[in-house]
Length: 328
Ligand code: AMP
Ligand code: MN
Ligand code: MN
Image 1 (cartoon, rainbow, N blue to C red):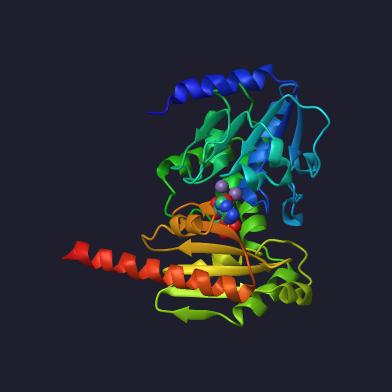
Image 2: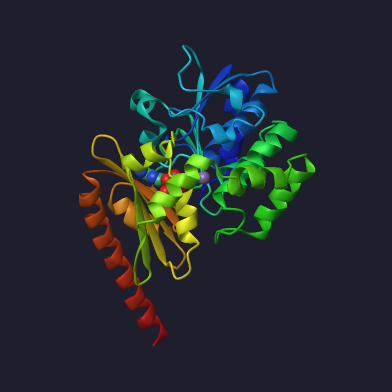
């Protein structure tokens, strides 16, 4: 059994003893990574601590509206005495800095988290890391004001894709309601992060959706480097196309292949059925959650696509056979 009270007491102690906290999250940051950094960063700053929020890939333009987003930098400060990793399942996903980094506190909700911190608070039941923070900030003696609440609610909204993933619970709605009471503007955050779409990302969607494929319950497509150039899309991410693929009717598993430089391919899986795609991702060296997972693979787009589709089809078939057996 994890000793949650003990873990929280140790986190509280570390947070209060530090002078300068370095807070990091994963490469290709999403709303939960950014909301977690800003939420905890602003709360710590309010208690007089110095903080550096670091994302190796920097802050995507769409999140610049958030108060506190200007605290995010791409570089490491010369001195710091506490390292906190948020929303990051494996140490190497923090980026190049991870090589000789001692992580004091690891706070996350990925079921595949390998507990790489000195203190690990990993809660896989929570739909977002920001929800874990919202749940514990007061216990750690940190204040929750409007800006902290906005950043935290943003993480919940984006990771739950607007409260529509299977891990949405009454408890998550209660946490979200409390963040609204503290001043977070839910409709505004919802529109900015989940509805509003830039023109280049819309063109990118068009190019990728033009080659959409389907085979039984499996739906997939690719984003090529050439698509990015044509669309004028500067981000390294998938412009949230995975969310759209998972919304297509009949899609039990959707897969997006995102071509990157130097024969690298980012693969994203989404599952609408009872199939745990984090297991498939882990097989290819990645990780994630049962309904949403990813892996960074080496090889040409064609090679990776062939390997991944073969394995994914096999898993889909196996899980259907098991389901049939259960129904007998
Ligand atoms: P994505 O497909 O990038 O949106 O990621 C889906 C989920 O899988 C997120 O929770 C990610 O943090 C996780 N994930 C993505 N890529 C990796 C990877 N290479 N290793 C471990 N976890 C990953
Ligand atoms: Mn994340
Ligand atoms: Mn997350």
